[in-house]
Image 1 (cartoon, rainbow, N blue to C red):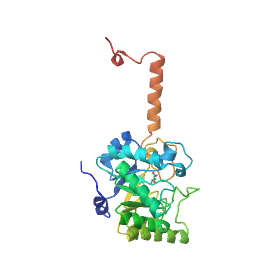
Image 2: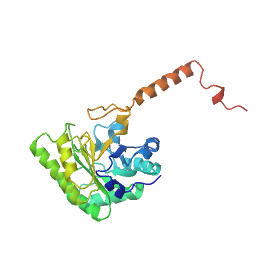
Image 3: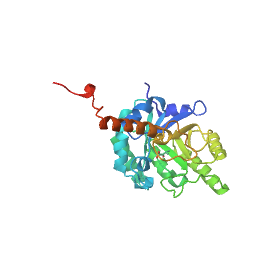
Image 4: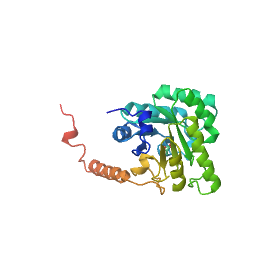
Length: 260
Ligand code: KIV
């Protein structure tokens, strides 16, 4: 299967919606890889896998471990490494960490949360040859509530100018999280690079969801998540069957036993 490159992502703007999902493990990557344009090794793994209260507690080393296995398992999608909280506090720290992340994991790009406030950092990374994906609107690394954005004029102007600043800084795509539809549409129509929405309407150039949320494995079901499966239920019914089999000595059967 052909490996997706950044130039392929750029070409899809206005032509075909970009399909993006998160992955943290080999098993999920192997399932989703052939269907995705982009796989994000998101710092959402802090909450989803490790039960943390926010993404602020996620460690760089944890991201490296997960990104290594995802990148190794992905043969098709572009794999993006989500830079955790405080790992890009200035341009030198950001460059050292982004370079290390790419060297250790072989990921294709990094993602940073922020707009105008990090534009100088993004410019530094892109000038040094590190592909960067932006992330504006609701920023989980800085948020204390998960309310959608773009409801006031002030917020709208700020988020719009964030999108322009990141575009100028050289990002190849921007994740727009939980932004009202009209603003997501305005940004998408006015920047030359793809926008990838999460809770930001169909007007974005692509969509991303946390895989665990959309397959019904996590407990996080905000309005913007559509649940395509109830995997929790499927797992639970398998566990119940296993319990019964063990209790009634139906497992292991002769099929599962080594005989000499
Ligand atoms: O960490 C993550 O999974 C993300 C997505 C929600 C875009 O940043």
